[in-house]
Length: 291
Ligand code: AMP
Image (cartoon, rainbow, N blue to C red; front, side, top):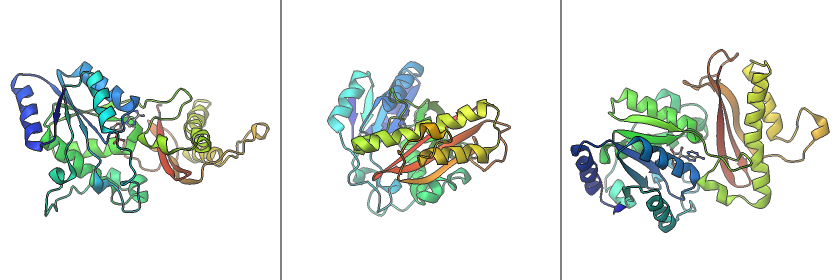
């Protein structure tokens, strides 16, 4: 596996692959790799002739109050895991190589970025769209792989690629979960034992919403209410009363799966999305509700 730090070298590497007639898969990450990241790498390895992963903790998508400084950095282990998956190259730039002096050009993110995470983290998607477009320019791959775990991010990237005519095919990878259902996340390592137990309320609430839908409940508001009650430790079935609760709900909604706009009734594919604080850790997860 070739380790590349210079953006120009990364571009040359991708051009060489493409000149040789190969398809190239790009897998952007912020490191602290887990099996969710590796599943994207594995899909790229299956679908493309060559795979380049990137590890870059992008400062412009973190607000000053967020966890940029303490975001986990495990570069050596990450590179070993990528090599173990037979990735061809890893691009690991320094911040000053990506944001050179006088950097001042940003992507104005699409409409789908304005709700949910866009409200809770106002600058987040500007940073995400900007770094992803930069990575697409540096590594002009044929395919790029993103996880459904970050559902709104995936829709933002799809819209940006469509709106700005970026010649890259976006491939979505399913959310990889721990055996008990918790979505894998680099941030899970912040959770205390108690937090870890309470974090399970998130995937369980999403499951509850999909179960309710499949028993005939089509009203988004009812599913939302059920999720919120469950997250706050107030299950409808009192016999199963549980004291477990998350610390804060940023949102727990059921919205249109493409636009992420509010809906009254589920008549087409919807998505249940949750963002909560558990202890000091902000966790997000989602599940599609396929009609
Ligand atoms: P991150 O390192 O958190 O920026 O994530 C890099 C990529 O991995 C993004 O496309 C994420 O959506 C994806 N990803 C993160 N967690 C998971 C997961 N549990 N399952 C699948 N993909 C994931």
